[in-house]
Image 1: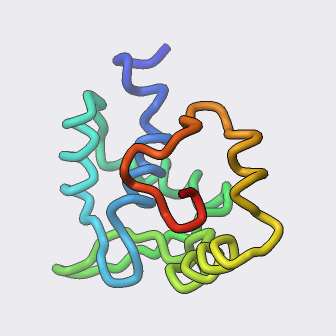
Image 2: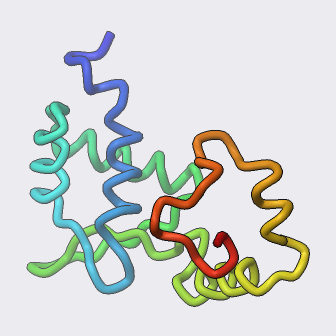
Length: 124
């Protein structure tokens, strides 16, 4: 049984912190990780975070640990890098098979049929 409510979610919160707040140039120190988890209502100890980081590495996350005064933990590899995302967006925007007519005929759940002032040239 977990010591507190957030303990079951600790591993998920840790993975999310690494995804959102780290990259090749920015790491989180252990004290940063502990304080961020505390803000989320999860009390954790240093040793348990080390175990959780190992578990995330076993799961396949590419976590780099840097020792020293300016050291910390960071997620090295992302599913998509920024240039890849830009390329995907450009490809979708320039595709000929996504017409305005088909877009209006079958809007995905949650998307309104009419534009609300923020239309692109494709959606107008």
